[in-house]
Length: 196
Image (cartoon, rainbow, N blue to C red):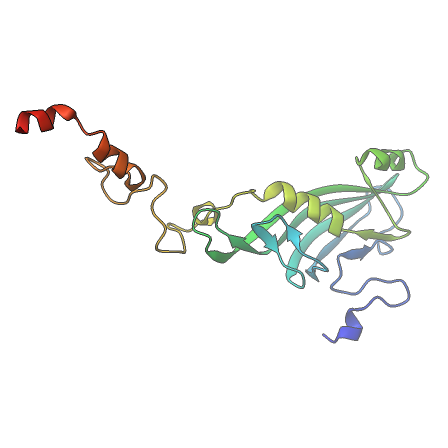
Protein backbone atom coordinates (compact mmCIF):
# COMPACT_ATOMS: atom_id res chain seq x y z
CA UNK A 1 0.00 0.00 0.00
CA UNK A 2 1.43 3.40 -0.96
CA UNK A 3 2.12 6.18 1.53
CA UNK A 4 -0.49 8.42 -0.05
CA UNK A 5 -3.19 5.76 0.28
CA UNK A 6 -2.45 5.57 4.00
CA UNK A 7 -3.15 9.23 4.56
CA UNK A 8 -6.56 10.48 5.53
CA UNK A 9 -8.59 11.88 2.66
CA UNK A 10 -11.23 14.54 3.20
CA UNK A 11 -11.48 13.84 6.93
CA UNK A 12 -11.85 10.07 6.51
CA UNK A 13 -9.34 7.74 8.19
CA UNK A 14 -6.91 5.65 6.17
CA UNK A 15 -7.78 1.96 5.86
CA UNK A 16 -4.92 0.94 8.16
CA UNK A 17 -5.42 3.71 10.72
CA UNK A 18 -6.43 3.35 14.37
CA UNK A 19 -9.06 6.02 13.70
CA UNK A 20 -12.34 4.28 12.87
CA UNK A 21 -15.24 5.78 10.94
CA UNK A 22 -18.60 5.01 12.58
CA UNK A 23 -20.78 6.22 9.69
CA UNK A 24 -21.30 2.64 8.55
CA UNK A 25 -23.32 1.91 11.72
CA UNK A 26 -27.07 2.44 11.45
CA UNK A 27 -28.07 5.06 14.01
CA UNK A 28 -30.46 2.83 15.94
CA UNK A 29 -29.68 1.28 19.35
CA UNK A 30 -28.17 -2.18 18.98
CA UNK A 31 -26.98 -1.69 15.40
CA UNK A 32 -23.51 -3.16 15.00
CA UNK A 33 -20.64 -3.44 12.55
CA UNK A 34 -17.52 -5.63 12.66
CA UNK A 35 -13.99 -4.32 12.17
CA UNK A 36 -11.51 -7.08 11.33
CA UNK A 37 -8.33 -5.75 9.78
CA UNK A 38 -4.76 -4.72 10.45
CA UNK A 39 -3.80 -1.21 11.52
CA UNK A 40 -0.42 0.51 11.76
CA UNK A 41 0.63 2.10 15.06
CA UNK A 42 1.45 5.81 14.72
CA UNK A 43 3.69 5.66 17.81
CA UNK A 44 5.18 3.19 20.32
CA UNK A 45 2.72 1.61 22.75
CA UNK A 46 3.98 0.08 25.97
CA UNK A 47 6.32 0.60 28.89
CA UNK A 48 10.09 0.82 29.21
CA UNK A 49 10.98 -2.87 28.75
CA UNK A 50 8.09 -4.04 26.57
CA UNK A 51 6.44 -2.22 23.69
CA UNK A 52 4.82 -2.57 20.31
CA UNK A 53 6.98 -0.28 18.17
CA UNK A 54 5.82 2.57 15.99
CA UNK A 55 4.97 1.38 12.49
CA UNK A 56 4.13 -2.16 13.62
CA UNK A 57 0.82 -3.69 12.64
CA UNK A 58 -1.83 -4.74 15.13
CA UNK A 59 -4.80 -6.94 14.26
CA UNK A 60 -8.20 -5.49 15.13
CA UNK A 61 -11.09 -7.85 15.82
CA UNK A 62 -13.76 -5.48 17.09
CA UNK A 63 -17.50 -4.97 17.24
CA UNK A 64 -18.79 -1.38 17.10
CA UNK A 65 -22.28 -1.16 18.57
CA UNK A 66 -24.44 1.96 18.41
CA UNK A 67 -26.06 2.79 21.75
CA UNK A 68 -28.21 5.77 22.71
CA UNK A 69 -25.33 7.99 23.74
CA UNK A 70 -22.52 6.83 21.48
CA UNK A 71 -20.60 3.81 20.25
CA UNK A 72 -19.49 0.83 22.34
CA UNK A 73 -16.29 -0.85 21.14
CA UNK A 74 -15.65 -4.45 22.23
CA UNK A 75 -13.20 -7.10 21.07
CA UNK A 76 -9.49 -7.83 20.95
CA UNK A 77 -6.38 -6.17 19.55
CA UNK A 78 -3.24 -8.28 19.00
CA UNK A 79 0.28 -7.56 17.84
CA UNK A 80 3.93 -8.42 18.38
CA UNK A 81 5.85 -6.68 21.15
CA UNK A 82 9.58 -6.20 21.55
CA UNK A 83 10.51 -7.43 25.02
CA UNK A 84 13.73 -6.78 26.96
CA UNK A 85 14.12 -9.34 29.74
CA UNK A 86 14.59 -7.61 33.10
CA UNK A 87 16.86 -10.46 34.26
CA UNK A 88 19.14 -11.30 31.32
CA UNK A 89 18.70 -8.05 29.31
CA UNK A 90 18.21 -10.12 26.16
CA UNK A 91 15.65 -9.01 23.58
CA UNK A 92 13.00 -11.08 21.83
CA UNK A 93 9.55 -10.59 20.32
CA UNK A 94 6.30 -12.05 21.57
CA UNK A 95 2.67 -12.06 20.53
CA UNK A 96 0.54 -9.92 22.84
CA UNK A 97 -3.15 -9.04 22.94
CA UNK A 98 -5.69 -7.12 24.99
CA UNK A 99 -9.45 -7.24 25.35
CA UNK A 100 -11.17 -3.91 24.84
CA UNK A 101 -14.47 -2.60 26.18
CA UNK A 102 -14.58 1.12 25.50
CA UNK A 103 -17.47 3.57 25.35
CA UNK A 104 -17.17 6.54 22.96
CA UNK A 105 -19.83 9.12 23.77
CA UNK A 106 -21.43 11.71 21.51
CA UNK A 107 -20.79 15.27 22.72
CA UNK A 108 -23.75 16.83 24.46
CA UNK A 109 -25.09 13.57 25.90
CA UNK A 110 -25.16 12.63 29.56
CA UNK A 111 -22.52 9.96 28.89
CA UNK A 112 -20.16 12.64 27.55
CA UNK A 113 -20.11 14.21 31.03
CA UNK A 114 -18.21 11.11 32.18
CA UNK A 115 -15.40 11.95 29.77
CA UNK A 116 -14.23 14.62 32.20
CA UNK A 117 -13.67 11.88 34.78
CA UNK A 118 -12.04 9.61 32.14
CA UNK A 119 -14.89 7.12 32.45
CA UNK A 120 -15.69 7.30 28.72
CA UNK A 121 -14.03 8.68 25.61
CA UNK A 122 -15.53 11.16 23.17
CA UNK A 123 -16.31 10.66 19.51
CA UNK A 124 -14.75 13.22 17.18
CA UNK A 125 -17.76 13.75 14.96
CA UNK A 126 -18.22 10.33 13.36
CA UNK A 127 -14.67 9.21 14.13
CA UNK A 128 -13.22 7.38 17.12
CA UNK A 129 -9.51 7.10 17.86
CA UNK A 130 -8.43 3.75 19.31
CA UNK A 131 -4.85 4.80 20.09
CA UNK A 132 -5.46 6.29 23.60
CA UNK A 133 -7.52 3.22 24.55
CA UNK A 134 -4.71 0.91 23.38
CA UNK A 135 -2.09 2.91 25.26
CA UNK A 136 -4.12 2.43 28.46
CA UNK A 137 -5.00 -1.21 27.83
CA UNK A 138 -1.52 -2.43 26.90
CA UNK A 139 0.00 -0.24 29.63
CA UNK A 140 -2.06 -2.11 32.23
CA UNK A 141 -1.44 -5.50 30.60
CA UNK A 142 2.34 -5.27 30.24
CA UNK A 143 4.52 -6.11 33.29
CA UNK A 144 7.01 -3.47 34.43
CA UNK A 145 9.77 -6.11 34.69
CA UNK A 146 9.12 -8.74 32.02
CA UNK A 147 11.26 -11.87 31.83
CA UNK A 148 11.80 -14.45 29.11
CA UNK A 149 9.87 -17.08 31.08
CA UNK A 150 6.89 -14.71 31.43
CA UNK A 151 6.43 -15.05 27.67
CA UNK A 152 6.66 -18.81 27.22
CA UNK A 153 10.43 -19.31 26.90
CA UNK A 154 11.88 -22.10 29.05
CA UNK A 155 15.17 -20.25 29.65
CA UNK A 156 16.54 -16.76 29.24
CA UNK A 157 17.61 -15.85 25.71
CA UNK A 158 21.00 -14.82 27.11
CA UNK A 159 22.63 -18.21 27.94
CA UNK A 160 25.14 -16.68 30.38
CA UNK A 161 22.41 -15.65 32.80
CA UNK A 162 22.44 -17.69 36.04
CA UNK A 163 19.32 -19.37 37.33
CA UNK A 164 17.04 -17.10 39.41
CA UNK A 165 18.57 -18.36 42.70
CA UNK A 166 22.09 -17.56 41.49
CA UNK A 167 23.16 -21.17 40.97
CA UNK A 168 22.48 -23.76 38.33
CA UNK A 169 22.02 -27.50 38.48
CA UNK A 170 21.61 -29.31 41.81
CA UNK A 171 21.60 -26.97 44.79
CA UNK A 172 22.35 -29.65 47.40
CA UNK A 173 25.55 -28.73 49.23
CA UNK A 174 26.09 -25.78 46.90
CA UNK A 175 26.62 -22.21 48.08
CA UNK A 176 25.32 -19.27 46.10
CA UNK A 177 28.50 -17.87 44.45
CA UNK A 178 27.55 -14.36 45.60
CA UNK A 179 28.03 -15.53 49.21
CA UNK A 180 30.99 -17.89 48.72
CA UNK A 181 33.54 -15.40 50.10
CA UNK A 182 31.57 -14.85 53.28
CA UNK A 183 31.04 -18.60 53.68
CA UNK A 184 34.80 -19.16 53.67
CA UNK A 185 35.46 -16.30 56.09
CA UNK A 186 32.85 -17.46 58.57
CA UNK A 187 33.43 -21.21 58.25
CA UNK A 188 32.98 -23.21 61.48
CA UNK A 189 36.07 -22.31 63.57
CA UNK A 190 35.89 -25.65 65.42
CA UNK A 191 37.14 -27.44 62.30
CA UNK A 192 40.39 -25.41 62.22
CA UNK A 193 41.06 -25.82 65.94
CA UNK A 194 40.67 -29.59 65.73
CA UNK A 195 43.12 -29.75 62.85
CA UNK A 196 45.84 -27.92 64.88
